[in-house]
Amino acid sequence: MPGEPLSIALTGIASATKRVEAVSHNIANLQTEDFRPLRVRQSSRAAGGAIAEVERAPQPEPVSVAGELIGAELAGVQAKASARVVGIGLEVLGSLLDIFA
Image 1 (cartoon, rainbow, N blue to C red):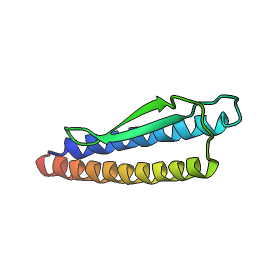
Image 2 (image 1 turned 135 degrees about the vertical axis):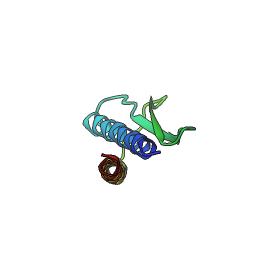
Image 3 (image 1 turned 120 degrees about the horizontal axis):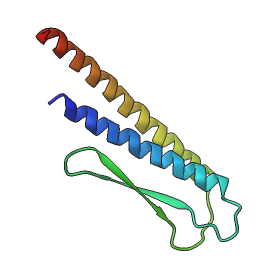
């Protein structure tokens, strides 16, 4: 069904967005005393796609800027790939509409 890949890709974009938000928060607050960074746990949904859950670390811990930047880069790759799937899905949907119009 044409809507399913679009829905799955949109969950990928939403997950990537949560990851970038967490990275931004962690870097902005890395010098805050007793800072507990945000962590994003991504898993697959039964219906397809991804879900990202944001959790605060249970105890203060140091933040690795390099690790956070790598996480941001990975989130960017995920968002770009998901956006490409959305674009292709919309092209396919447009072709189907042209066929049936």
